[in-house]
Length: 232
Image 1 (cartoon, one colour):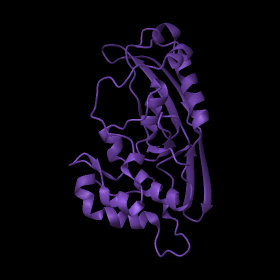
Image 2: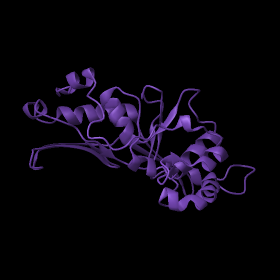
Image 3: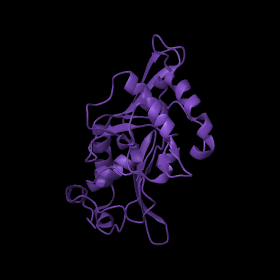
Image 4: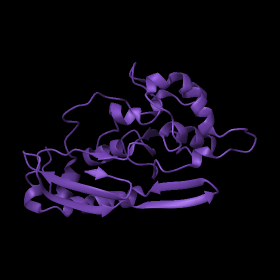
C-alpha cells in the first residue's frame, strides 16, 4: 500500500515480485492559500480511511484471501496527531504545507527559521536540512498557535499511522520515518534534545523509534474482516 501525495495505490505481487493485481484511489487532499507564500495542505483522515478501505476492496477477492503480508509506504514528511492507542486526533499536514514559515506577531523570524538555527549544529546527526513541511518545523508552529489537541497526543507520520490503523496498535516509528522529521539523531538513535528543550515538548510526545522488523503486527480482526484479508 502506498499513500502518495495525489493518490493511494495498492498492488498484489507474487513470489517473483510480479504485479498480479492493482488498484488506485485519490488521496483526499485540501489545499488552502491563506497568505502570500503560505499554503495549508492537509489530508482528511476520515476520508483517507474510506479510500484505503475501498482501495483494498477493489482488489480481486480470491487474491486478497491469499495475501501473506502487507507493506506500507507513503509521504515521509508532514505530521498528524494520534492518541496513545494510535487513533487519529487530527488530519495529516503534508510535506507541501508552508504554514511554519509564518512570522507571528511580536517575533522577528518564523518558527521554521528558529528551528533551523537550533538544528544547524546537529545536521551531521540528523542527516539533512529542515524543511517547512517536516514535523520539526510544524510541531513548534502548532504549539505556538495553540493547536495542540489536548493532553494525550503523539506527533506521527502518515505511514506509521496507517500501520497503526491497519493493526489496531499504538504508533511506532521506523528509523527512515524518524529521519524524515528533521529532528532525529541517527547516530545516537534518539530525538534531538536541544530541539525538544527549545520547543518545550517532551520526548514522550514523539513515537518510539523501533528497528526495521520483517513483521510489525497482525491485521486487526475488524480490518481483516472488512477487507476480506487474512488476519495473520
